[in-house]
Image 1 (tube, rainbow, N blue to C red):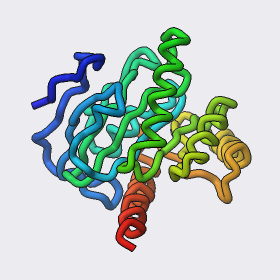
Image 2: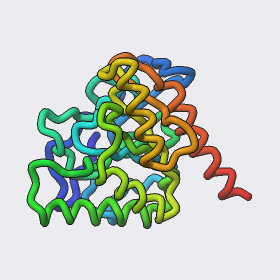
Image 3: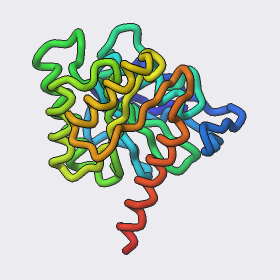
Length: 227
């Protein structure tokens, strides 16, 4: 059952998916993926202490579609018709081992300035204080190559010490020339040593490699904790 939403949390929560056949996404088998809860306060994060990997990016960058593709589900993470619709942190437990966390989109379309600031402060507090957060996947539309707000947001997250993986989304929307140009732009703007991983939720490009990076981040942090 979906938990009762804490005060201040929206009632129209994403659906919880439980009974599905195992699916392979790249080399990773998804045995189970389920929505656990949504939260608008650092005080209402999941009580279960499992590693967390968060996903962030500008509104309409394809974040929800990518998370669904990674978990082998079509509608577990709500894909809003209106960009910026997600206004809380939504937690999805995968294989009973860790959480993938859907964060509100950077830019927060269709909300007031005060609400935008409130959500930005919440994301910042989550990144700084959540001890279970092992890394953050930041999506950039490969066709646009990264906006000023993307660079500012990533720099702020890096300053907290949280590992950030830059991923170029919507690979299927770009031709070869646009893809090469976008990857070069992202590499330069975000100070990367090499071109970022590019993915397509529709064509399933790059999902296996992205899972490899996610699992590596979780395992590396666990090893550091034990050492």
